[in-house]
Image (cartoon, rainbow, N blue to C red; front, side, top):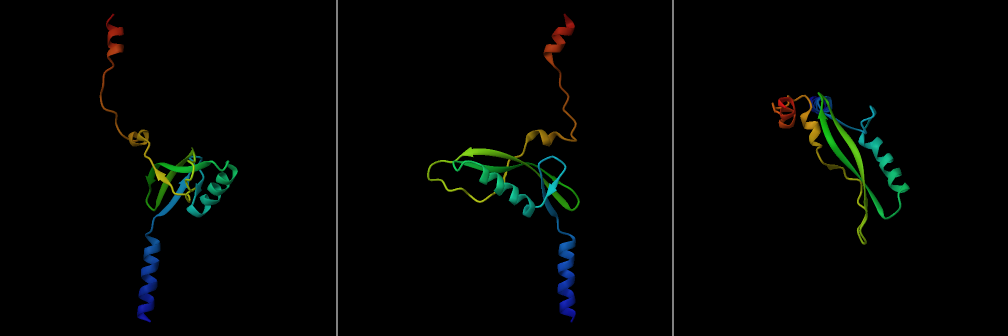
Length: 118
């Protein structure tokens, strides 16, 4: 009985401290992986067979118990003989998101300085 309670307690603790991964199209709606896959499959089916839809995560934001992945899509022409892969998210960080909540370095614009001095 102690063993059963210990196993249940470990599983509950693991689930309680696990992070949830959600996806968003930056529209305020959050989707789990199970919820986003039907969207991807229906979008792929609506395309001509020579095109491949690739979901790209362009920014990840970590909150207390949630990881938010911001998703965009790219459309690529499939090469002859290439098999269509299952949906696999690629990750490409958008550098502008790295500047959020950061102080910009000090700089001077020479063009404006020359215009002011004239």
